[in-house]
Length: 577
Image: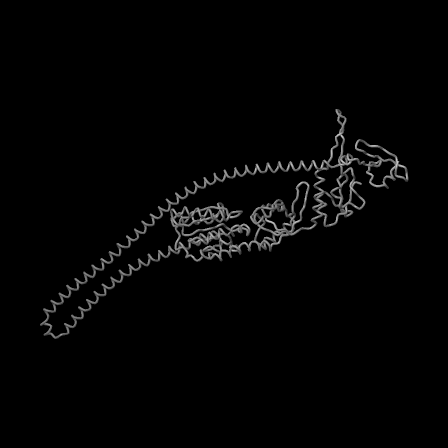
């Protein structure tokens, strides 16, 4: 036969295909080509069909000219052994099993999703590892639903409840094929982690401590904690640099990664270090923690007790711009104020500064208006008093004219004198009032420029001082960043050397184990059985005789002993010589 057809049930088709079987559409059956080892397919061979003995044992004799002895080579190919393992795995796991896993790595190639999975114990140490994949057709079906339901993407650190089927392949080893993901489990795990930390902070009485602080009256120094190359940081710095350029506010930056194992601890360490350095120069008015949007599982790294407790314990307001409006993290919940994006954080700071500028301008305009109003009031008072005096003088003169001619002649001289005296007194009083008014106006005019000059001098001094401090701080940050980079590079070299040493030891151990296994395998075979006194009986066609009936049906038999073979003829009906 050019082909060996197999009886493969539908549920085992993937296992048969993985072992190399093909499907004949004409007869609707699976088959393997002639010459292929049938041991791995023994579970699906038709009744009465068994793999040939010659295919299960590979034997060859090599003559040596010097000793005349024969060396027998024993063993089975590695592919046959692994194909048997694959068949056993396929039969044991015909369908998928729901399994709890944690993703260590995830990558996408040609639409297929490849995963590195693990399970950790209570101390966080891995106790199981496996490779897994989601084929492109399955991924396009289940991943959009999962991402829509959870807001998360498959990535490092996320925990999943998946339906997986173990698959073993001779070339690639054991892996898992995933065909379903339970989104409810992932949502529950993320929310349960946040709820546990939230409850602990509430029990400790610090959950809303930072939120109860009064907002900053104004901003002159702000500490900003963000990832080094975050897109949101670039938007924030565009506006922040404009405020710094005019000497309005100074921003100090501390950088840390915001996702991955230990990210929250690095954020706390970076912020604490920057606060200690700032205490020597100027205490910040607020701490800003910004990142920008991201997947739910990327933001989930920030749902950490140490980071949330650090924010709660600060005695200055903490402003966050970590995610979009739809995102919510524990730092957002415990911070003094939460903004949707980094751009809105700097916008809130600008609005507060603008409010204070407007208040100062209003106060200045109020002071200037009060001075002007005071001068106007004095001028009007002088003019009113002058008008009253003139009116009184006219009234006295009119009454005097109404008197009789005799009385007028009698008091003419006295009246004239009194008029002259009143006129002089009026002029003197008017001059005095005008002098007082001029003095008040001159004093007001002198005070306003002096006040404006003082304000300008103070503003220029503050601007110069801020520029000097910013330059010094920038040089310090650059020096320390370079030192930290050198230290990190040295640590990485040391770790890579330790990894190489451990990998070499693991390879050597695996090589020793493989050699021991091969020695065990090669130690089995018919020669060992012959050595214990048994013999192998074959027909004249070379087939092994395993029953009395087969012996009767053969005219010639070949009996193989430990030291050679003997041919015998059978007597029909008696199955003997």
